View 1 (cartoon, rainbow, N blue to C red):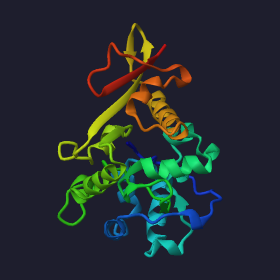
View 2: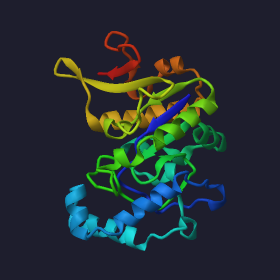
View 3: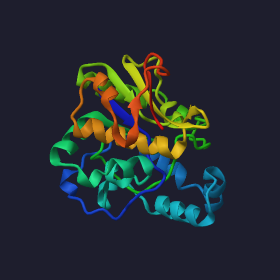
Length: 255
């Protein structure tokens, strides 16, 4: 069973971590090509392309301008600790044991516009490049075209190495579009999280993100291999809702 997440826009670069434990990212050639393209952009390009403030654009402009290959010449960050959005905050990685990290390294994957597909201990540098960013790279009109089948092929290899052909999709739609599910030889289970409000169940983005992190942590800390055990997830008031779940679209509700 492989679990897949989206990255976060924010990066926590204040991490004390043993670099000897880090693993190498697996798409260096792709990432180098992306870096070359990012270095051609101006601050104003970052502002318009990413719809961010001038300060954030300046920060990311400087990040790419200062970045050079080999990346190992810099202080790398473990991907799972570096991402600092709601999903990762609710995972509470700081409390992970050595066995939790080992299980996560085998089972958890993070989609990335810049790095393709990350394992928790893969060493990364601070960056910002959402998968849905409208940027052309060579003949490719966007990042989905740029990554083409590369992410799929590596994800399939990771699924195959686990031996059970199960993928738990806890990624956002923006990122999961980079996975070609029709070509993937795996059963894809997609949990979603909804709140009872105004007489019906609704997905509220911030709560859904937090719940994805909670479920990820639940899987890792309990060393879950059988996907049916996910239906036991009952953290923060959520429970599996059989009435509105359909097929492999599993809905967890509260309220």
